[in-house]
Length: 115
Image 1 (tube, rainbow, N blue to C red):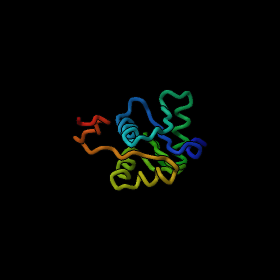
Image 2 (image 1 turned 135 degrees about the horizontal axis):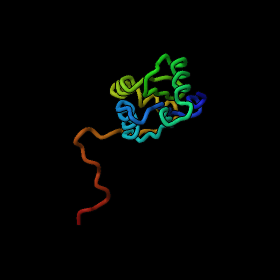
Image 3 (image 1 turned 30 degrees about the vertical axis):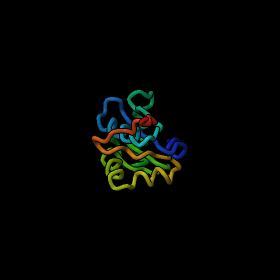
Image 4 (image 1 turned 120 degrees about the vertical axis):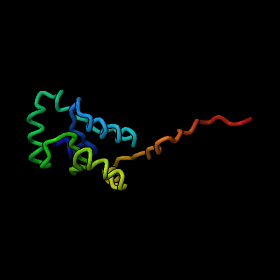
């Protein structure tokens, strides 16, 4: 569990969990690459999940830590993002983000100039 302090963004996940997928997608959309531990693919995943429960009071996944501080699960992470708190937490942890485009917005096309 020392990873929580040594990596700015930690996500403890399970590969089959749809809520984990939503959390990982949010970080991807923000341009953030978290350290992801897939507990169902880790030999000591059950022991790690039990230790996480002791540390965070949360046994479910995803279990998110930013800057060594427990954020919560998907609901708490998504709510922090909607309230603008997540970006500040990431910045305080030394993580740069990009703002996700609103739904339906198009990405800039690049550098084509009209002649």
